[in-house]
View 1 (cartoon, rainbow, N blue to C red):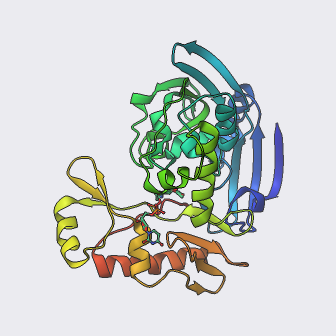
View 2: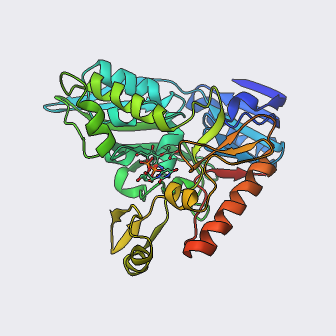
Length: 337
Ligand code: EPU
C-alpha cells in the first residue's frame, strides 16, 4: 500500500493541472482496500476514487483522500466454444487489456483501442467509441460497498448501463468501489465495422483483422483527438446531447446539415462537437484554454490553465449552444472541488 501526504496530482489528471491531494492512498489488493475503508480516520475524511484521471477536472487542491487502485490482473476464468471470459483488475490500464485481447486473437474491444484510463473507471463511465461500448462485453462488475463494506458481484443487467452512464457514477445509489471487471471476448473474433470513418480507413489494409482494426482505430482516433501526453485534455468535454425526436425535426428544418445518430425511445443524439463548431468556438482560445482545432468537443490546456479557467470556457460554450439551439449540454468530464 502507498500512502502519501500533500501529493501532486499532476500526473493523475490528463489536463495536467498542478493540483495537490491532502492524502493519496493506493492499494494493491482487496484486503488493502477493505482495511482503508474500515479505517476510522478514512471514514471521517472526504474521499474520492480516481483512475488515470482522464475524465476529471480539478477546480482546487483536494483536501480529502484520493484513492487509487493498483489491483492488476488479467485472468482467463472461462473458455467456451466461441467465447473467453477475462477477469480484469480495476487498476489495469484499459489499453493494455485491448492490446492483450488483440494479440491473443480475442475480439470485442479492438474498437476501444487507445482510450486513456483504467479498467475500473472504464466500467463506471461506460466508455465507448467507433460503434462499441464497454457494456457490450461486460459480464459482471465486482465492487465493495463503501458504507457496508460488503463485496458484491453486479451482473451487467444490474449496472444500469446507458450512454456514458452506470449506477456506479450515480450519486443517488450506494457508493461502490470497483475491484474487478469480467468481460466476454469472442473467438473467433466478430468485427463491428459500422462506424463510417473506420470502415473507410480499413480499405487501405489488405485484410480485416483484429490487428488491422486496432491500427485503423488508432489512426482515426489520433487524426481528431489530441494526445494527452502532449496537450492536456480529457477527451470529449461534454456528452452528446440526446433530444426528443420532435425537437430534432424542428431543428433539422433550420439546420439541414445537422448530423445525428438515432437513439432509443424516440430520441435523437446530436454531436456536441458540431453544435460547438456552429457557435464559432472551434480552434479559439482564451488564456491557456483552447477549443481543439480538429474536434470542438475537446478542451485543451495550452499551458498554465487552471481548472476554474477551463470550467469558465466550458460554461460560455454551454450557454452559447443553449441560446442558439435550445439544447442543454452536460459535461462528460467530472468536476472535482
Ligand atoms: N463534428 C463537427 N465538428 C467538430 C467535431 C465533430 O462538425 O468539431 C461532427 C463530425 O463531423 C461528425 C459528428 O460531429 O459528423 C461526430 O463526430 P465524431 O465522429 O468525432 O464523434 P463525437 O460524437 O464527437 C464520440 C465520442 C468519442 C468517440 C467518438 C468516436 C462522446 C461524447 N464522444 O465523439 O468519445 O471517440 O464518438 O466514436 O460520445 C470521449 O468520450 O472522450 C470520446 C473521445
